[in-house]
Length: 129
View 1 (spheres, helix red, strand yellow):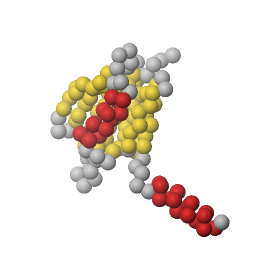
View 2: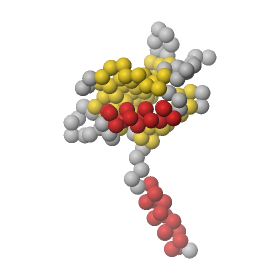
View 3: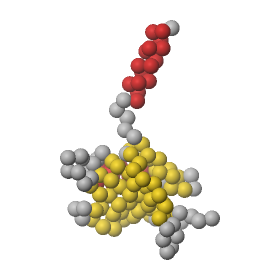
View 4: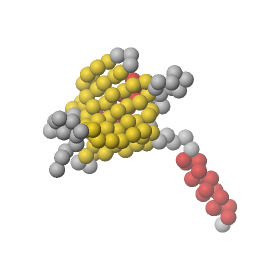
């Protein structure tokens, strides 16, 4: 019995190894976007046209790879993308789906050149009840 417990514990430990963090971004109406990364900050930002929900996420890949990954997930949810701004410092994309609020994403490279990776701010208008 002890051997079975030790083997089970070892399997469970190894199962958790190598898995990256995953952030589930709740876009509302039961729609969730799963992003491989670490949630840095989540907040609401008031604006003239309504409040925006913002999630800042740290990622282990380049801005282009992060954008490809998030675009692939949003395509599965029926969204299409439009590049709004593209420069060395910033990559800004809007994702559109008919009858749904626009989802924006602002991709930036990590400030520390020694630490590969990027940050993404995902934002969308919050439905006010």
